[in-house]
Amino acid sequence: MQKHLPHHFESRHLPSFGWVREIVFGLNDGIVSTFALLAGITGAVISWEALIIAALVEIVTGALSMSLGTFISTKSQIEFYQGNLDGKKHIKKEVKALKDGFENPEIAAVQIGIAFLIGGLIPLWPYLVWVEQYALWVSVACTLGFLFLVGVLKSRFTHKIWWHSGMEMVIIAALAGFISYYLGVFVSSLVS
Figure 1 (cartoon, rainbow, N blue to C red):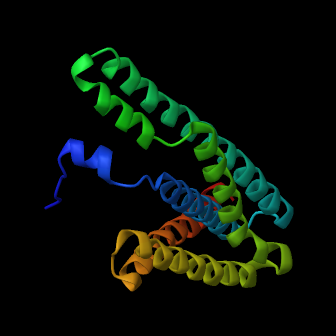
Figure 2: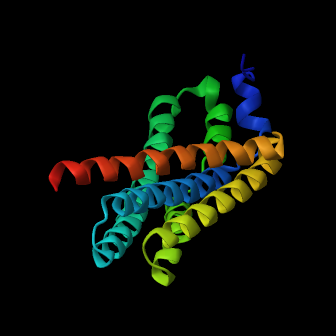
């Protein structure tokens, strides 16, 4: 059962670590989505050039989508509180505490976009160096190793068991890659 802190404690006493969320989310999404795409295309045995082009397009458009989505959602959250809480005299101090706790939408957008780009390049670089199945296995090792490291670093902020945090990220990515690879194999068999 999750414990909830009183609202007044949350807004006044907890430090804002929005950047942790943006960087972990951006890295994870960039790595996992690119890894899953590469695994699926490798499973489908599509041309090498098409694979590289698809991955690069996915990385750039994914980073843009994540950046714009983060910007608009963070801005909307701030506007929601401003619209619903401003002008109510008995909660003026609470409104100020809430506003001070929000992250800057522009900074959050840049953080998640850059993290997504970096994350997307982790599983892609082996495909730029090696070919076919060997690239997939190097990509698997790099992706899962990097995600384990991100999970371990994340545990420093969440105070969770380091190896549990690392393995959680590895299992999610491995599952996405496994499903995508065999989905690529299956779809390829249907159309060929």
